[in-house]
Length: 346
Ligand SMILES: Nc1ncnc2c1ncn2[C@@H]1O[C@H](COP(=O)(O)OP(=O)(O)O)[C@@H](O)[C@H]1O
Ligand SMILES: [Mg+2]
Image 1 (spheres, rainbow, N blue to C red):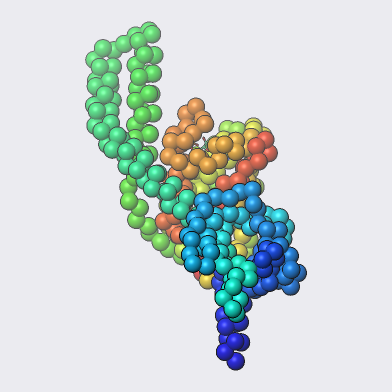
Image 2 (spheres, rainbow, N blue to C red):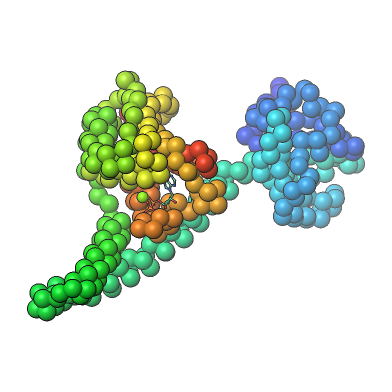
C-alpha cells in the first residue's frame, strides 16, 4: 500500500523524474515524459542522452557529496519531433539496497517559460527607463518650442516677408509643427492611462475606425476587406483607446501596401477558459518586416519611415496591456505582415 502511494507520487509529479543504470540507460521515468511526446515504455532501456541535446550545455554546477556528485546542468531536451526545449537537469547518485551506487537519478525541469518571462520583464524595465528619459526631454522641449512657434508667427506678421523668405518661414513653421506633434504624441503616450470601460459591439467600432481611414485609403486606392465572426460577443473596452490602437495598426498596414492593393481585417471569437478571446487580425501584403527589426517594432521611436515617429505600435501595446490584452506582429519579408490584437471576452 505504502509503496503504491510513493509510486503514484513519483509517476505524477509535475517535474520529469528519471533514473538510469550504470550504463546510462533508463530504468525509471515518470508520466511527465508524455509532455515531450514520448511513451514512457519505449524509453525504458534506452540511453538518457538520446533525448538530450548534448551540444548546447549551459551553466553547470557540481557539488561533491559523500556518495559522489550532485549536478545541476542547463541543457536542452529534444521532444519526439526533435524540437529542443531549455531544461535544467539535476542529478544525484542512485543507491542500491546495500548503499552501493547502482546508477543516477534526477529531475528535468522545463525552464522555457521562466526564461521567456524573465526576458519580458527585462525588456519592460528597459522600455520603462527609456520612456522616462524621453518624457523628461519632451517636457523640457515643450515650452521653448511654443515660444519658438509664437515668435516665428509674430516675426512673419511683422516682417511681412516676400519671395524666398516666405518659403523659409514656411519650412521653419512646418518643422516646428512636426516637432510639436512628436512632443504631444510622446506626452500622450506617457500619461497614465485611465480606461473608460464599457461592454459594447466590437464590429461597430471597427467599422467606425475603417470610416476614419477612408481618405487615407482613397489617396492610395487601397481597399480594406472585412471578415467578421458572427459569433462575436459584446466586449468590454474603452472605445476611444481601442480606436486609437486599431487606427495605428491599420495605418501601418495601409502605409505598407502598394497603390491599388488591399488589407484584410478579420475578427475571431476564440473559445478558451477561463475567458474567451476576441481576436482582431489585420493582414497586409506589403514588404513585410526585416527579421532583425521585428523585435524592435514595439519600442518607442523605432521607425523605418522618413516621417515616422515610431510611437504608433508602442501606443498600441500600451493600450492593449491596459485592457489585459495582447498585440503581436508576425511578418514574412516580401509577403506581408499580420498584426493580431487579443482582448479578453466574457
Ligand atoms: N504593417 C507593417 N508592414 C511593415 N512594417 C511595419 C508594419 N507595421 C509596423 N512596421 C514597422 O514597425 C515600425 C514601427 O511602427 P510604428 O510604431 O507604428 O511607428 P511608425 O509607423 O511611426 O514608423 C515601422 O517603422 C515599420 O518599420
Ligand atoms: Mg505607425
